[in-house]
Structures are given as C-alpha cells and as structure tokens.
Length: 139
Image 1 (cartoon, rainbow, N blue to C red):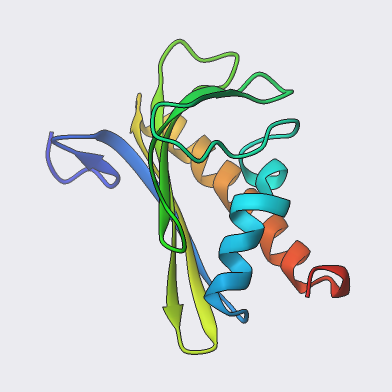
Image 2: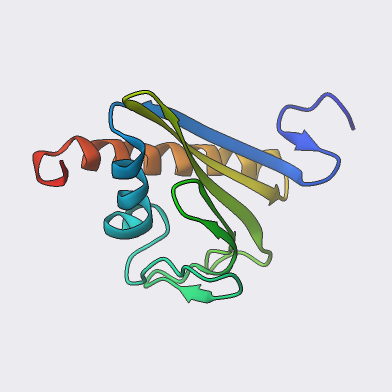
C-alpha cells in the first residue's frame, strides 16, 4: 500500500528521530561513538569501528556494523533479544555552525505498531543523549 506514513517500497517500515543540539559536531560524535554508546546502543559494549564487526549489549541487543564513517555516520543491524528479525539503524551527525544535527534512523520494521514503539524508543534515547551532553561533566 502506498501513502502509509513510514512505509517504503525498499526498506519496509521506518522511523527517524532527529534533533539539533547546541554542541559542536566533534563533541556530539565523540559522545555517540565513545562515552555515550551505552545510552543509545546499549550497555556493556564499545561501538565496534570496523565493517563486519559483531556486537552484543548487556541487555541482549545484537548486530553487525555495516559501515562506519568517523564524524559522519555509523550504520548497523540491530536486533533486541525479543525480536525474530533484524532491523537497520543509522546514526548520523551533521554540522550546522556551532550546533549539530543528530539523527537516529531505523528501517526494516515489521509494521505500524513496531514503528510507533520504535519512535518512542529512539525519542527516549535522543532525550538521554541530549541530557547527557548538557550535563557539565560532558562538556
């Protein structure tokens, strides 16, 4: 069916959450790729930096790095422990002067219900990243 919000012909159901953060790109990227990985990917694992590297978080999310471009984006497969399928997540950063746009994009979702749940999930992750970056200890 065409015209359904969040449905594409190629990637199935998808969701994107983005926010412009009042921090330079290098600070946002460093947090996403290093110190803040546990906030968005899951606890207990560093972000693998090589294509084809596998990961498993402490809370059971598994996947594989599909691409890694420093200061730009990381693309990976993503499967929580209760799911029977992989999805694809891409995290991107874009400079906008002294600010940075951060985006979580997820595709290959099964339907509108999963899409809605993942929108809430990634919105909460974005809120956590924004709060952590705003904390004095991360500046």
